[in-house]
Length: 145
Image (cartoon, rainbow, N blue to C red):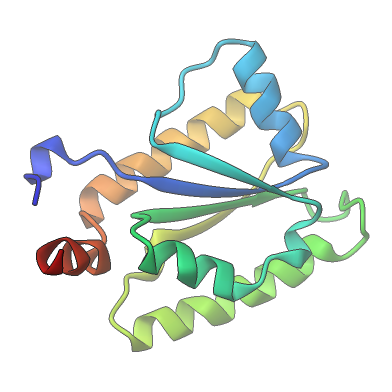
C-alpha cells in the first residue's frame, strides 16, 4: 500500500462524445497538462451511462469517476444529460449506504470548446481525491492479492 504522499489518484473519465470528449480532444491538441492517471471512455451520450459502469469502475480500483457531458439544453439527444444527473444523484445515495464516499463520483458540464475548463475540473477532482484518499475497495483488493 502506498503512502498518502505518493498517492496518485486513478480516475476513470466517462465522457459524452458530442461535447466533453471533443473538449478533452481540444485540451490535448492545445497541449494542456492533465494527470496521466486519467483514463477516458467515450460514450455517445451521458444518458447512456449505466450506474453499473460506475460501480464496476470503483470495484476495479478507480479512485474516482468523472462523468462529463453536455450543458443543460445542449444535449445532442435532447435530455440525455438530464437523465445522467438523476442517475448520479440516486447513485450517490446508494454509495453512502455501502460506505463509499459519494465524492468519488463527480459529474460536470463541458462543451466541445471548453478544453481549458475541463483541464481545471480534472485538476480540482484530483485535489478532492487527495483529500479523500485512496479507494478503500482497491486497498482491500491489494491486501488480498
